[in-house]
Amino acid sequence: MSRSPVRVSRRCGKRPIRVSFEFFPPKTDEAEEALWDSIHRLAPLGPDFVSVTYGAGGSTRERTQSTVTRLVRETALQPAAHLTCVGASRDEVDAVVRDYAAAGVNHIVALRGDPPGGVGAAYAPHPQGYQSTADLVRGIRDVAPFDVFVSAYPEKHPESPSLDHDLDVLQAKVDAGATRAITQFFFDNDVYFRFLDKVRARGIDIPIVPGVVPVQNFKQTAGFAARCGASVPNWLAERFEGLENDPATRRLIAAAVAAEQVIDLLDRGVRDFHFYTMNRADLVYAICHLLGMRPQAAEEGAEAGEDASASLPLAANG
Ligand SMILES: Cc1cc2nc3c(=O)[nH]c(=O)nc-3n(C[C@H](O)[C@H](O)[C@H](O)COP(=O)(O)OP(=O)(O)OC[C@H]3O[C@@H](n4cnc5c(N)ncnc54)[C@H](O)[C@@H]3O)c2cc1C
Image (cartoon, rainbow, N blue to C red; front, side, top):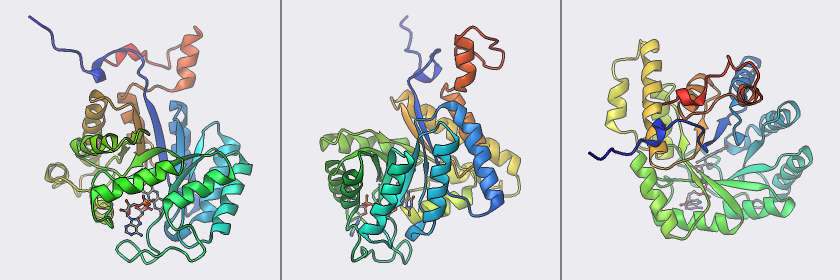
């Protein structure tokens, strides 16, 4: 009798997984404390980089910069600063990029940004600003040899006339020097793999890293999905149905939903994952654990033959 192959997610031993975590800059002292608690909780997992978003219309410019520079100063993490073209001239954007270069930041997530009037309003570039994301990518690379990451939309950007047009835009961003794309979140993994096939058929060969959003709050996530053109399948809504007043069960369902999605991605060959953390660590930490990731200091201790009681062996990850 032939045995079916063991699923990747059930194979023991260390896997070549790379993760990154996305945070947003905090508005209050309390939110700042929660953010740094989350960063300290997730940091030992050794993410490839951690990114900090840029508020719509550049509204968080100072807070994004101060969070990114604090990451450089106080942690060993590689921060990636999000930056958009909205509401600023080229000179103003270039000044921010130069500050990042001087601070020792190596990664920038370059975006066009949403129209200043909000999602759905017509987008008009700043008259003296970068006219497109590809322009911005080029401008950043002219300042310093940053690793520049960009967005990708498996379900099409809401303003785009077609997925083909999105692929033209992605191609232009790659031609301008982007080295990796991070996708908008999605819940149906087939959507991601179909998009990946189209990207590869175009000859675009940079990593297209799936953006995964753990559903910490279904209503909020569904609202966000509606604005950014990500579909929410009926089965997902059904899983959270009737749990409005039951946060404990909601958390368990959220963990199960996220686990199902990332395990399937892993089994189908994905090795890079970008998590939209919403500045909360617990769910993301648990998912990374499922992926086989363990706190690095504990593992290094185990490798050096020190007391390894704090770190379960990866082999337990069957
Ligand atoms: C991983 C990720 C991180 C993000 N981080 C932030 C952030 O930190 N701050 C923030 O404000 N927003 C952020 N966004 C949202 C993003 O700014 C919006 O989706 C914005 O509308 C498009 O920016 P972009 O760089 O993705 O656009 P692009 O990749 O440049 O364009 C996206 C699509 O929009 C269409 N499009 C663009 N310009 C035009 C035009 N002039 N006319 C017609 N169609 C056009 C094209 O079809 C194109 O494919 C993020 C999105 C993702 C996926």
